[in-house]
Amino acid sequence: MRDISLHIMDLAQNSLSAGAKLITIDIEVVGGRLTYKLSDDGKGMAKEQVEAVLSPFVSSRTTRKVGLGIPLTKHSAEITGGSFFVESSLGEGTLVSATYVLSSIDCIPLGDLTATLLTLISGNADTVDFVVNILAGEKSFNMNTAEIKEMLSGVSLSEPEVIKWLHGYLDENIADCLGGYIT
Amino acid sequence: MKSLEELKQIRQKTLDRINMRKEDKEEAVRVVVGMATCGIAAGARPVMIAFIEECAKRGLSHVHVTQTGCIGLCQHEPMADVIIPGTEKVTYINLTPEKARRIVLEHIVNGKPIAEYAIGSQEEA
Image (cartoon, rainbow over all chains, first blue to last red; front, side, top):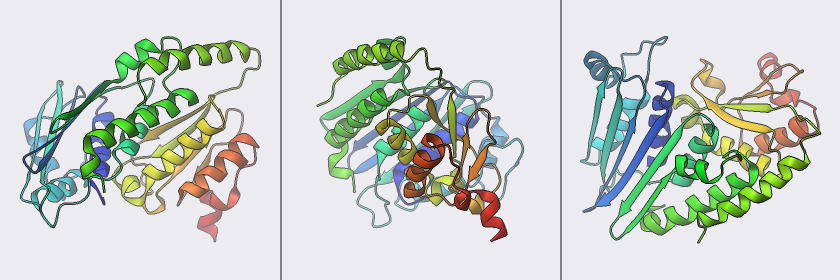
């Protein structure tokens, strides 16, 4: 995992495996720290399972919701002096949050957030909705795929023309908000 | 700056086109990319973007590029299945964006699977 956007991708995959129908991704840059939060309405985890996913040595292959991904992400945040936490309740969903200290020499770059969001949205166009909120200083960007689908009524989000538009839309808005952090 | 307003035009354009091609029933083709930790770490995201972009560029609206979790062959990631109705499913391994684009052209458009990228041929080699 070479950058933050790949960790976000990996965490979102966990939400998808948990059967989420709505995934909210919040990204906030404030006071030299970058925090992202992913919350989903998937099947959630019991308390013991939440503790277990933090360990790289616990993996229930057949029933698992997460594997090595969480420990890697946790490490990537904590090594910068940041933090990581998981909150979950069975049957209701999961919230995962990670904070990175941007000035740390160990902080990995943000990476290609557009690619992460485009693959997630277009790869699950007909089954899952995504809400994206980005806030960095004065700049902010909010999108909701449910709204886009409503505007498109009768046309799938995975249509080539729509995908091309979405790519440009994400690219421009993410660059506008996070331009200074994209490396 | 791209805006949500543009979507309305795109919607109308697409609807016109969908109505035009209603007669030639193209069956849905599925491309399923492995996107678990192993796949992502091995470079599955640029591969998936390549599939999405190449299909969009060629206007292949009957091709659905979707993602799945780990199928247990992590050493072969990035992997993708190409599923064309009426033909045998092909599992491609050790993919790159370049290979993905070639698969769209040769397998999905021209109907000729690329044996050298498929799982069977590489294991024997």
